[in-house]
Amino acid sequence: MYKKLSIALIIGLLCLSPIAAENWDSFAGDVSHTGYRSGNSDFVTNLWTLGIGSPIHSSPAIYDDILYVVSQDGILKAVDMETGEEKWNLDLQSPTNSSPIVHSNRLYIGCEDGLKAVNINNHEIVWDYDCDRVESTPFFYEDVIYFGSNDGHIYGLNKDGKVEFNKKLDGKLKSSPVIVDDNIYIGSTNSKIYSVGIDKETNWEYTTGDEILSSPTYVSDRIIVGSTDGNVYCINESDGSLEWKENLNDDVISSPTADKHDNSVYIGSNEGNLTCLDIRDGTIKWSFHTGGKVQSTAALKDNLVAFGSENGYLYVLNKYTGQEEFNYNPGTFLFNSAITSSAVMNGNSMFFGDDSGQIYSLNIEKYEVPGSMQLFYSIGVLIIVIIVAVVVLRKIRSRK
Image (cartoon, rainbow, N blue to C red; front, side, top):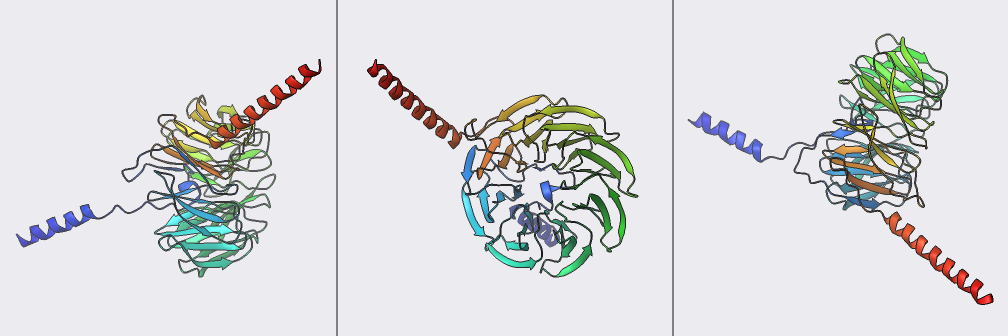
């Protein structure tokens, strides 16, 4: 009887205890770059905007019910995803274009002066590792934080900031690593994509035609990555042999997003397109033209794919057909700001930042968007133009 009571008590305590937050361990949340969380709490989708003061080039991270966003000037903000309320902020005291990751109440972010770890409970920098500029987004793997640096090294630090891994490669490592089965995959400005074991042995390297700023995606035993030579490359993860490549006619800085269930990979290009390719042979399934460079990474939810363009629009397409479901232009033409930050999703909520320094929350299920301050500015400018035009016309008529 006592045994049954003990079991019942344990079950009851487990039910009362909070659900552990899901970690955000890499760029765009996983090795396929889907940027999506199903949502693990009673989360209500609301529409809001929040200004953080300077351009947002990095992509947000989701942990618990908080969105973590870092501006170009190094201001980290924790934002309530439901209300858009700023919970706290921290000056990292260094510019950054890297995206944050969060694991077990620790946030890791690359900056101009190295990598920093932040305790999100007390909002303090726990440690920082001094190296050359870190534009690469870290990857958390088996209690080690791996990242590339502009000094050409892949570093792996433990949770205390001590070096566990250090491998020198060539070029600048601005690409974000992906790690699968003890192997690190990362691109370099020396045109190469590398496979390096966590035992520090180089498995293979493959040379493309130009710099690799895109971050590789892993899907179905393949590594897919873009190059500034205009091609998307699909490489066999075991031996580094080329399976296929497809030319997209202009620099590919965007990172690929993979959907293994549909055998599709989605990637942007500076030609202004988001293109859907077949993972198996590189066949183009469809391509959607925006009119502005597409350097953001697409996010996936159900049958939808979402991404931003430098023309100031956020697009949501049907992932099977490439047909536009809806778009959102917070700049309303007059105040357009490039969207290079990649969107992320929690349940039906989608979040992204732009070069105006604004963060936006949309409802992707109902296609609802927030009102825009830029709209009011546009209306204000229009009113001023009308008033000036009326005054000028009256002066012209009075002279006749």
